[in-house]
Image (tube, rainbow, N blue to C red; front, side):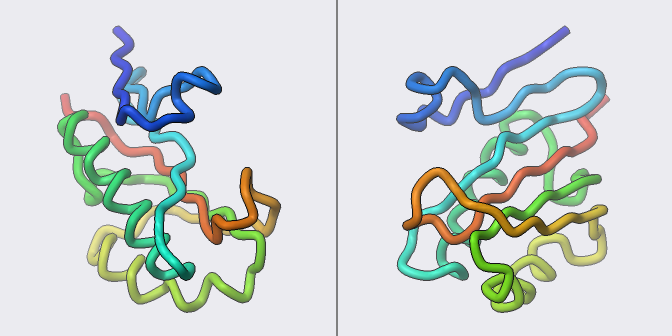
Length: 119
């Protein structure tokens, strides 16, 4: 069984994707950008959107087993570390950070997670 979760974001319909898909025992959350004037604000905002998708799927950040971070400037990753440590706490997932271009230069970080789905 596959369950699709939409956040109602404008690009979901334009591009043809959904915020998350629950399938095969996992919750796959699409790459998510956030709003804000700097990388830390955008990081917090993206995590809020991801958290809402996880909640709708019946999961939490404690269930996240994999996270990928995409940033156009790797030097901006370190300011996000306290936010990420607070979010994942005692349940840190396997993680990868990749320096790359994002869909719009105003975005400073994109976050993608995979979590265990509730049984």
